[in-house]
Amino acid sequence: MKIRRYYAPGAIVFLTQVVYGRQPIFQHPQHLALLRSVLHNVQDHHPYQMIAYVFLPDHFHLLIRPHDGATFSDVMHSLKRNFSLDYKAALGIHGRMRFWQKGFWDHLIRDENDFAHHLDYIHYNPVKHGLVTHPEDWPHSSILAWKK
Image 1 (cartoon, rainbow, N blue to C red):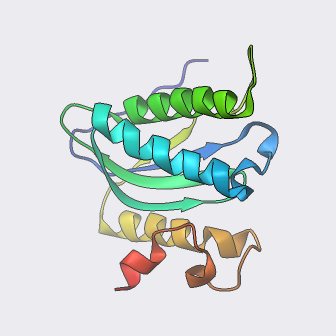
Image 2 (cartoon, helix red, strand yellow; image 1 turned 180 degrees about the vertical axis):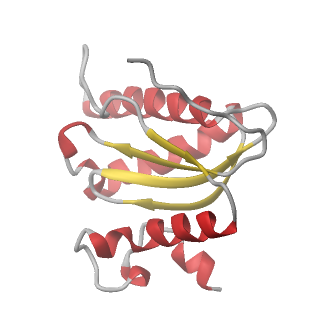
């Protein structure tokens, strides 16, 4: 079955990507730093505004607004491909490997209430997963930028 994606120029989109087998790869600082670096580099080729994020040990959530003709699929495909290549190179892995779960989950933000719900979901996700007691205690999210 083919996934049908809907695009709306200028729209904000909520994205979720999970590591294959829910391996906690991003609990390692060097792998999380690589993810952040690749996300930043993807912006050069597929421009987007990062609105909110959370990186957990085995998955991440983003709230982005692609622009200049880029789509969220462009962003995600570039991110997944380039992270996988850089990860393999850093670890000296040759040949094929499966890093990400197939596909990714997307949701176009419909209105202000939908935006607020997804922003809260992102920031409270570490609490939901039992990683911290308060969202502000999780160092790998955008919550402090939103608390200013």
